[in-house]
Amino acid sequence: MSPTLAELEVGQEVARRTIEVDRARLVRYAGASGDFNPIHWNERFAREVGLPGVIAHGMWTMGAAVGVVTEWARDPGAVVDYQTRFARPVVVPDPGAAQVEVTATVGAIDAETSTARIDLAVVVEGQRVLAKAQALVRLAA
Amino acid sequence: MAVNTSYAGRTYPPGEVYEVSAEKIRELAEATASTHPAHTDPAAARALGYRGVVAPPTFAVVIAQRAEAAYVQDPDAGIDFSRVVHADERFTHHRPIVAGDRLTPTLHVDSVTERGPLAMVTTRVEIADDDGAPVATVVSTLAVRGEGA
Image 1 (cartoon, each protein chain N blue to C red):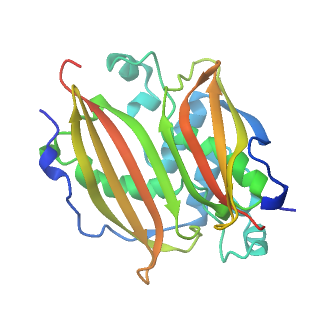
Image 2 (image 1 turned 60 degrees about the vertical axis):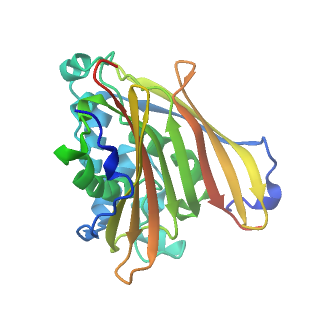
């Protein structure tokens, strides 16, 4: 069953997930998205432009974070609006992986438009990497 | 070279048609660990009322970034990509994107502003289907560091 507006409360946590990101996943995202900026796969290049190392595409982080919302809503087409600011880069080590912790809570409920605003806290090593990450989800009353 | 503020307000001619394929949706869903079955299983998508597999909420970036290239790769625009940081992004879906869609992006440069050593560049890509009906709006802001910043 999909969630309904009536069963939600502002502040309620609705979903939580940890997503692992390694260099292979970034290469896969580069191919899927067509964004081949070398800062996302070439350590030497990333350091030359002043980064601490290879960083994830901001759009990878944004795309991965909203997966908890589409799963929870049980319908990827229910997300009618999704926005974020990119607060900090996600440095992806090699060898190893970065752990991206996503927590989704109800930020607002609007009965008139049949939508709930789901706020996403997206954290790597204790620091928020996305700011004001908000997905507007259309739900049945 | 500094970012060219005279590009603000510019609208580009519609870009090439983008044909949304089930395989591209699958690739992007798998790359972003988006596990909802409607991204990959046509039967699961049909059960939700869609005529093809459904794109993840950020799929439209693929179409938008292709359209944005006409601007950000224009040497006269003065955007040095080694100095660019993605500042923010927003997707508004007028309807979900599904496999089989033929979509046309139209790029607008909404603003180019200088804040000290930073230039903020906001683009908006309006994505429409073959009937001209709006499908998605993608707004993206880049921060470009100036020389010596």
